Length: 393
Ligand code: GLA
Image (cartoon, rainbow, N blue to C red; front, top):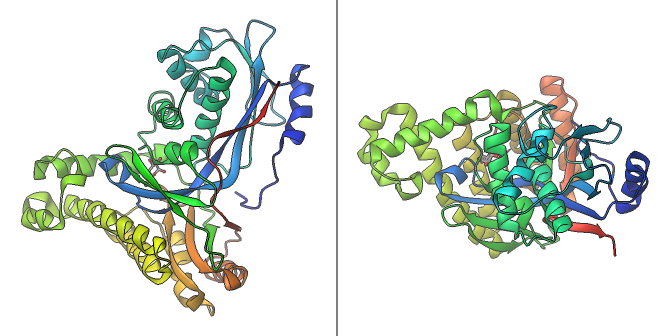
């Protein structure tokens, strides 16, 4: 995976689309990947998350197909796949097409009739890096198809459609965070979401003295491999013991009280979730008052808890986070942590802007020395959530 990606624009997409289909698209929609600043494995526990959208996007160009069949291209250079209107809303091959099939199905469930379309997908969100390329895919397809059909699908509904697609067509039991931020992200803002009722507030991230640094561990992760589902199950089991609907209702005191009945594993899983919710609130308040030191401490606490209690980190990611304490420029790092589902993927750090390139350089060098792995990074601002790039007049 390479975090230093090529750019995507309407000007670059139009000629590709015309070459594939011989006519122009009616709509081009974009939706971003995300990096989660804090609040990990809390979304499916009705807790708090605090992600921001990236500037990297998945772009979907569409127009009604003149052939009466759907014709889709999954990425630039691929060949066209053809599906009948009935096939387009059922699971099938190739695997990537399920992201589109699922969205078509979920739109139709909501009464939106999707006509056969010619669709070209292009993305510069790296796949398998924990930056939610799948959510960006689902949400951009939904945004494009809704606009094409003239259907009013608010961003949060688009996010739910993406999540249902993930559950029913991709078989990943994800929470709502990734799709939600991809749909609702706002330029120059992070977003604090209460996953219990989907209420949210934007948190300005406009302080020029602080930068968001994302570094890839170059370890592939896969949420479908069971680790994620197993964590969800541990959390449900803990709820059963505690007699609560979700871990959102649990407190640290309750966990102490029921420690023996919970058993070590469920106790630690639940402790991560309960404490992480507290850290999200502390982080949000700190960022809002420009207290980056406190925000950084919350991030560091989050990482330790994900590593030790929730056990979703890995040696490579721990090495990267460890380097943020030991590199020569360590005093310029406010905090660093793994981001996303875990088991590899990226780390996110808040760094003093005047030192961010130096920090990135030292981290990459340290990583190469420690593990022999070459990797890449980006420095990014919060990007815009799903939006239309182009609409034929
Ligand atoms: C993945 C899932 C999200 C969330 C994170 C962990 O990204 O898609 O819903 O659970 O893992 O915070």
